[in-house]
Image (cartoon, rainbow over all chains, first blue to last red; front, side):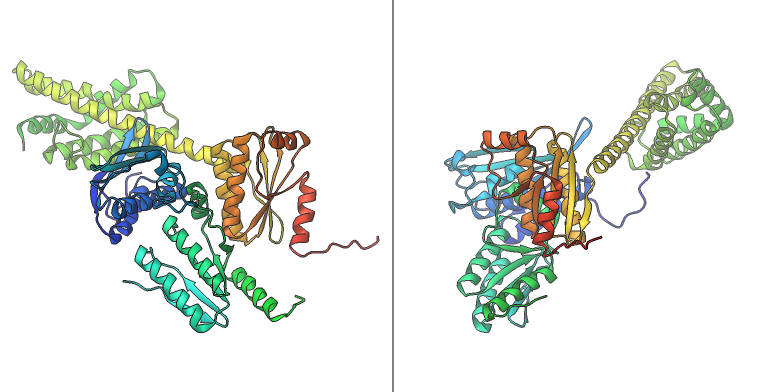
Length: 142
Length: 127
Length: 285
């Protein structure tokens, strides 16, 4: 059980990263991968959360005019979880219900990104205000 | 910025995606493939995603677009090697990838494409 | 060395054998064999005492077990947890082992600071807070380990109850038995999909003869599984559809989205072979 010396640097249990350009979407995926591996999520759970992070970070960059992603590895009683918050000071979402409807076939901007992400996570919280910004917080528990 | 190489094998074009695709790179691939199909008159496109651990809606849309564009240019596209975790996630995400043909691996994918070429040529094999 | 640490350093190093003796007798006082008062108990205690003494001498923060200087102590406690858990000791007994430290420690503090009640009181307080932290750490490590064991056993159980069999070249079958809840289906999906890739099988037969009821939720799970299979480039047949289930499916208006269904596994296998291009002939005996 005592950890053997590892050459992999561990990420801090909480932190943030900027989401300004396309490259940051890739960086975000890689960060979430490291975090989910660190928290020892199953492969499928890792894939789901990283995919959700990809969708949400893209929304932040493309529709939110840039912002940041904050993460936290949480311990709630006996269970471990990873919480991610995607925040921007962009235009906000005028019609939340519409945005959360699967937009794939209708070809709307956000497509399945927002609604699909909701299905990939355990907890989903969306806060938005037109002219102020948007914050989507998601979490997956082991 | 990376550029995904496109290989030519007979009447088919082969693409192996092995990196974490940045959006621009995916779009560039789309452009490159379309240009190559046109230039070479390729009848088939095989996209190997066995190394892709994440397929999000952007990549999904790219695959569907390539499929559609290829079809217009009279070529068939087959996407091969989707990882189980990716398939499970795509289903949950709600991405149907409609219009995109898939096969388990490169071998099967090539068999599919070749059968298509033969059919086009009016050849019937009794394997 | 900090003053507090110096006092503890003295107490821990004054007479280790006596310290250990008093510690283990306190452990034995609990009357429970699993608390570990035997030979292994002595070895465990000695190691823990060594780690504690080293940390204290290295000026470890007595109020904070997360201090880097406590690393070896934490590691010793974790190993203790693990070995006790493996021996079947309870969490309570394992942490009691650590708590019993208080006795020799307080005896030692009394001996060294007996003449100064205030100092003795403060040191005792620091000592009790520290040992409580040690015990807490031991207990939570134990807990986590038990959870890991349980999770692993659950996984094994689930895997055992959903075997994926190869019926023929390119044809896999999975007999589903019992209720199909989402975690069950998830596991089946993962196992089946992985096997499909490993064997390069293009057809999977999902037999639901052993599934008592099919409602919209179950149907959804099945549909998701088949969609994933198709996304990967293979296909699936659902077999074992009893008449009642067929009725329920129609009644609930469940759309099976063009998935082929067969009443029996045998029918499904026959169809699978045909699809794979096999003709079966029987030579007259």
